[in-house]
Structure formats: structure tokens, C-alpha cells
Amino acid sequence: MPQFNEYFLNEIAKLPPDVAALAHKYPREMMSVIYAWDEEPFPEGYIPESVEIYYALPGEVNVRIVDGVLTKYNVPEFEGNPHYVSVFLDGDVAYIEIEGQEVLNKLGGATLPQVTIDPSTLIDMLAWSK
Image 1 (tube, helix red, strand yellow):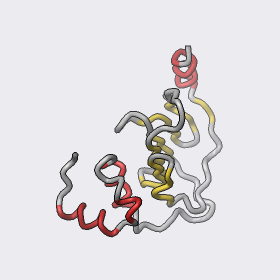
Image 2: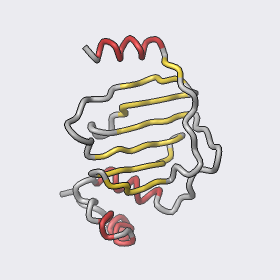
Image 3: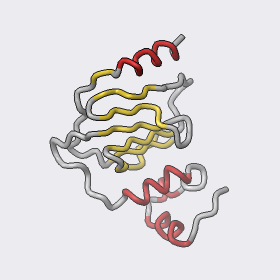
Image 4: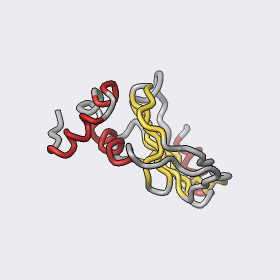
């Protein structure tokens, strides 16, 4: 089990009990929840310059969109749902789902940009899918 310092233990205690109960099993995601908990949702019509989606592999981005261009796509296959999903918009935590439970949703009025695919990313995607 991870060791949380006093600050994080105090912050975890402020969360709803069902969310706080996930802290020891998903410490990285919970630290993101704590940092973003009191932040305002993204404003209506907000279009992020960068979108990063993480799941399955701790610390490794699975999908990255920068300035409307898909630059990374590495989505492993799962039986069922991934244990967690974290979405960052312009480097800020926007959404976290853990074990199928929405834990944090700061998406607000943000909308995804229209996306094109970088040619090298497309080649990597095709090679990866074989």
C-alpha cells in the first residue's frame, strides 16, 4: 500500500467516502483527483489545444491529440472496461473514472477539436493492430 503524507491523507478525508475508498488501490489517479477537486469545470465552448487519455498502463499516454492532430494512439484490447481512465485537457485533469465509477468530471463545456491523423501515427496504428 502506498504511503500518503499528512496533506494527502487530509485531502482524501474530504472526498466522498466511495471516492476516498479508492485511494490506496489507485494512488496516482487519486492524487490527480485531489489536485483538481476544487477546480472549476472548463467553460462552455472551450476547445483544448492538447488532449491526453491514459488507461491501462500507469504513466503512459494512450491517446494524444495536439492542435487537432492525433499524434499517438496505443489502445490495448481489454476484456470489459479498463480499471481507470484519466483525461487531461491542456495539461489539466478533466475527467477520471475508476472501476467504472465516475470519480471526477471537470469537462464542463469543453468540446473535442476536430481531429486529423498524423501520417506517422496512422502507420504506427496500422502496424500495431496486426
